[in-house]
Length: 359
Image 1 (cartoon, helix red, strand yellow):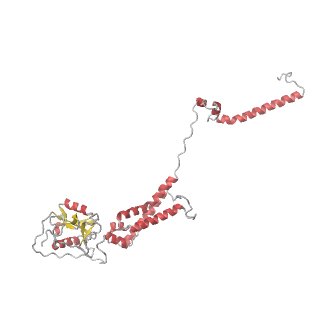
Image 2 (spheres, one colour; image 1 turned 45 degrees about the vertical axis):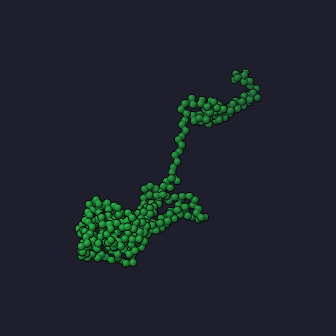
Image 3 (cartoon, rainbow, N blue to C red; image 1 turned 60 degrees about the horizontal axis):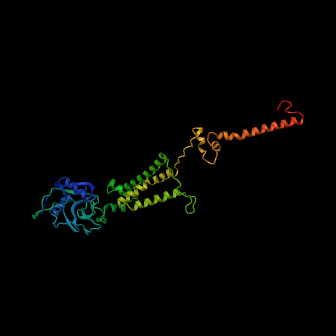
């Protein structure tokens, strides 16, 4: 059968997008996701992939089973064409896989098809507006350009990111390294991203310490399982960081979950900072009692059992006078006592205080 299009009619989208976004972009350019109806078109598609860097992350094509499960249709009018190029064991619909990708030249099954999750991120292949269904005229298919080969032990039916992250020399930053360096990231690049992650955490802790004054605090009792030498805060931070490292490592193949644990691992010290600020906050002192504005306020207590004079002595104005009163009374008693002693002394000597004109 003759091919309906040439390599010049095929557009290779290099952005990593989901299937629906890929098709929308194709339609916006006046075409659609590519359909492959015979070996000639299959060879053209493989040549386009090889000419554009090999599509290491695989590429979307138009085949899908949205209408009826296991009934694979193309987005054009040639849905019933029998040509298929499934990889061994495909389609397997493992977990509601309704869209189809073509393996890039980085896979040992280069050019074969695999049903996959429509929400996964892939490159994509568009073709110009519909060119009709293929004719029955024989044609010689162009020879596809062979792409590079990789280890044939890799299972191409799995998500490439899962294969790489699960076997990569990495602890916490595999998806980030793949996003920056691609799926062919080297062990040194994985190690670099892990080192940058740890360095960021250290700089972030120092930033909290010297800019915001955050310190490691005792979050509770210092005695933990009868070990008094281990402050609770240190034990809490150690266990929290170990848990987040383990959770980040185990979730590397599930990017949304990995991103959650990764961000928590980098910023767990902020929780301690907020706890420190809360536990060491300074409480506002109550406002001082306003002194009486006039002596009229002294008489505001006359309807009480306590007399207004007692209330008056309890006011701010007369506190000092109240403190000085006992000393004044003491001095008056001493003076009266001295007068009595003098009078008694003169009387004993025969002097009359009245006769002397003293009284």
